[in-house]
Image 1 (cartoon, rainbow, N blue to C red):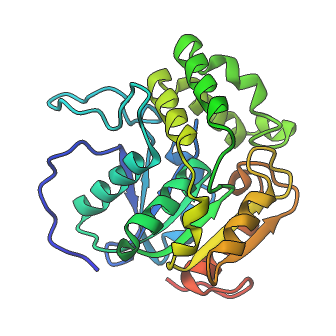
Image 2: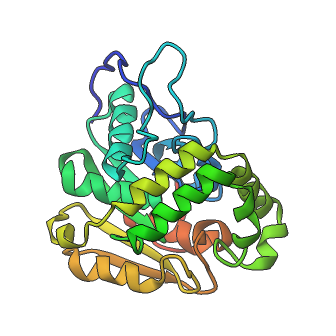
Length: 281
């Protein structure tokens, strides 16, 4: 499971490690416009048995969009050619830097798409996959190309007013966690956000879903306007042996708005811990 840690020669996304050194390796991917903090509601439960690595998308949180000092390479291209496969490569680099041959993966929205890309291209690296409010295709490419152009021109500030009602219920936006998520979006670098939109524009793995062999869970928010439950059902119908959990009253960031059912679903899928069972360290 764990190999000698190789020297890092390529740029890595900003990441944070939590949990016991001998815990089962697990990587958590964030959604577009958020930082690794989006996973804080699930972290205390997951780190009881897992060594958890959370990472920031390029230009999000503490990950730069432009080349870092001492490097001539961007994390992903910012010229309109970025792909989800580029983001998946960042995850593999982060895992390699830890010496992890295999790991469990869970991702929200774009972060979930990264996990699906890993499942079809590098199935030998994954032990289990969870996709929260995600999809095998996120709508028409032209929509994402336009959003990328808008953000490159105007930044992320104009999007703030529209996120309550999409990410979560309007009233959740005034809670401390909701406000922190919106602040993450406000602080996101325009070039990095736009590059992630480019990646979503070219992403479509619908015709490869039957190739997925890793144990897969999809979680859908029943009130999610961005990736409605039909997106999760499409994945579950096509991926052999996969499971689906729909969360009542949850929009796109279901793990933040309704954390308990999402946490329970992840524990069942990744640890075999049923709701109501005591989780021992």
